[in-house]
Amino acid sequence: MKTKLLGRTPEELKQIALEAGLPAFAGKQMAQWLYQKRVKSIDEMTNLSKQGREALAQRYEVGITDPVDVQTSKDGTKKYLFPVRCPVGAGHDGKGHEEDSFVEAVMIPDEDRKTLCVSSQAGCKMGCKFCMTGRQGFHGNLSAADIMGQFFAIEEAGELTNAVFMGMGEPLDNWDEVKRAIDILTADWGLAWSPKRITLSTIGVLPKLKLFLEESKCHLAVSLHNPFPEERAELMPVQKAWSLTEIVRLIKQYDFTGQRRVSFEYTVFEGWNDTPRHADELIKLLRHLECRVNLIRFHRIPDFPYGPASVEKMEAFRNRLNEGGLTATIRASRGEDIFAACGLLAGKHSEQ
Ligand code: SF4
Image (cartoon, rainbow, N blue to C red; front, side, top):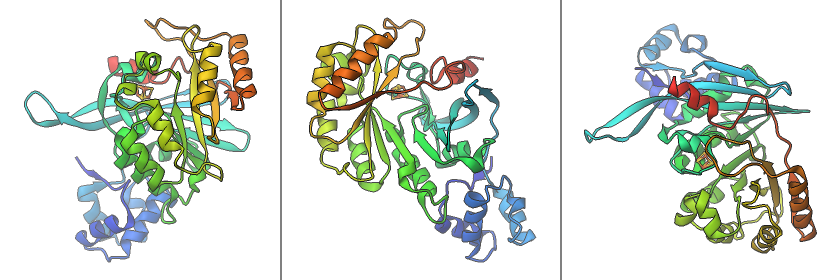
C-alpha cells in the first residue's frame, strides 16, 4: 500500500522530495498542490519534473478517498460516508493490525457559511450510552490524512468556511493527528483559516484538554449533559476518570472574554436532566465563566431508556438558565430527515 502525502508539513514533504531526487523547494510546491490547489493525484503537480513525479508515485499517493455514500437533506445538509483503514492496538496475537470501517462527515450550509462536521476516530472508546458511535466500539484513530481527506473529497471542498470536530470519535483521544489537521487548516502554507473558524467538541479528556487550550486558539465545546456527577456518570463513563468539576476548573483558567469562545452542549432528555434542579446546578457550575449553553434536541435511538424532552420543557429550561444569568439557546436541528443519529449510517455500512 502506498503512503499518503496528505497530512504532512512542508518540512516533511521536503524530505520526501529530496528522497525522490527533487530539489528541496519542491516540498513547498507539494504543500501548495496538496492544501491550496487540492489536487487528487501526484501527476497533477505539474511544476515538479515528470521524472520526480514518477519517482514519488512509486511510493506515495495524495491520499484523498472518495465518499461511498452521500445523503442530502431537504435543508441542504449533506452527510458523506468514507471508507477508512486504521491501525488499532495489538490483538490477541500481540501484533498491531488494521481495521476497515467507515466514518461520516456532514456539510451544513447556513446563509453565508458552509461548515464541515468532521470525524476524528473510527468508532469511539468513550462509550457514552446515548451515542450510536459509542455503541460501535473503537476501530482506530484517523490519521491527519484521513481527517483532511474529509475536507477535500466532498463536492463543497472549495466553499467550506468553518469546521467543527464534532463527528465520530473523541478528538482529544486522538490529539496528535487532530492537532496536525488543525495546523494544516490554520497555517499560511495550509488553508490559512483563522482558528476562530474551528470548534473542537470534547466530553472532557482532561490532560489533552490542557494541551488543546495551550497549543491552539480554536473555540471549545464541551459535552456536559448533566451537572450532577453521579447522574452524568450513569450515561457518560468518562465522568469517572475526569470529573466535570475538574474540567470546568481548568477552563476557568483560560481567557474566553475575547475572540475565543467556550460553549457547553446539553442534550435534553425527558426526565433525566430537564428539571429546575438541573438548571440551578448548571448555573452554579458555570458561574463566572463567559460561555454559552447550547440546548440540543435528542434524536431517539434504539434500546435507550430516555426520549427527547418536549419543546415546552426545553423552553422552560432555557428560560431558567437565562434568568440565572447564563446565555442559553435551543439549537436548531439540521438535516433531521437524514440523521437518525450521528454514527448510524457508518454503523449500518459496517454491519453490511
Ligand atoms: Fe464518543 Fe462522542 Fe459518542 Fe461519547 S458522544 S461515545 S465521546 S463519539
